[in-house]
Length: 202
Image 1: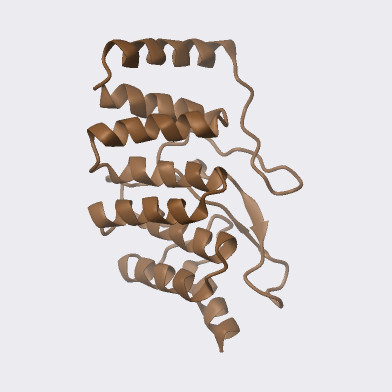
Image 2: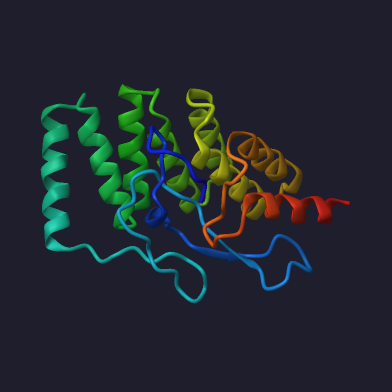
């Protein structure tokens, strides 16, 4: 995971979700554990044997909280914080389409929040919309050029979902300019991943 001091866009180690197994290319020994990160996850979601993340079951407490936020946003449609919280709860419980809608409502009120754009991008990827996910990460980067997690996520989606190795390489090279010590979820440095892609592109 990219390392950086606590600030806007800071991602804690335990915030890994959506763990997936992929190989950068034929010959990449054993594959690498990758995932896209969100900005506010409370804990990692376990990956199934097939590599897809499994959201936690919807508890009565979470449902009550969701119901309260739905009521709150209904009474005050401009409550950007409530929309963000609602999106986060839907995110945590695997309600992908609802999370997307909540984040979009939040961004309609405050379009300058790089974290929300990043979380939206993760959900768009989960919704099988990788190109829109990349566009969301680009929005985050445009708002905060040092937003490491959006750059890391962009590289993952470009490499794994869109099969665009050169563009993924560019995304991670830009990340390394910001943080030369950035790491992937499995602990491998982004520098090493970049070196592997460069080798495959020769």
